[in-house]
Length: 251
Image 1: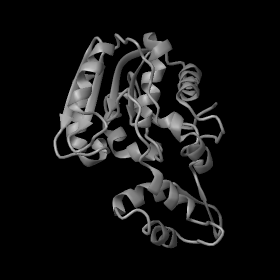
Image 2 (image 1 turned 60 degrees about the vertical axis):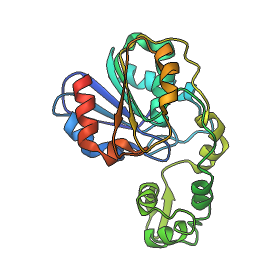
Image 3 (image 1 turned 135 degrees about the horizontal axis):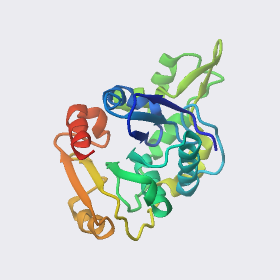
Image 4 (image 1 turned 90 degrees about the vertical axis):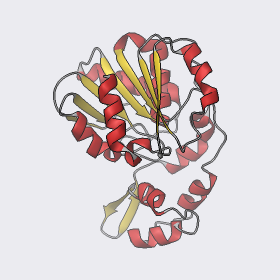
């Protein structure tokens, strides 16, 4: 699949993969900062952002998409940064393409599988009938019945766009996401990795726990695990200075 992407800056390529329900625009601020030193490639993964929609939605397919993009752009070796779902895509990618990755940064996600915890968000998104709701304000009001946190609602509603005058649409492929949620929450079967890897976890997030460290260190032979205090799962957005500093120091 030909993924939508944007390139900013010059130097060694640094690819950034967003998380579930997100897209590359979520990384604009940090990406511009990274572009002072690297050639940043902002990627929309399949079924997200401006990239094509497809019923097939799993990490094998997303890793293949990434390889196709790298080959199309002529990038033989890159730095790779992935958050949440993007982190799992990155770890799936190194299974067969470790020689193409100079260094790997995984933001607040582990190799393990996770229990479903997006049910309320999905229910809220599916409750928004875009044949009836004709404004972002009305969509926000409807979603607020399910998602109390205004920051999370704003994040989700960034996916709305005007298909034409008076008709909103979703950039993300909600039916494919719902159908394949088990794939997205599943574990990555990675036996070993010698790519230098940095895991960055939010102190307030439960995606990477201290009890997970041993299992990560068994797989990743050259690994650092850093915790950002007072930050949750969206660690890059909640603590951008600390996140930037950790990534820049690692690279």
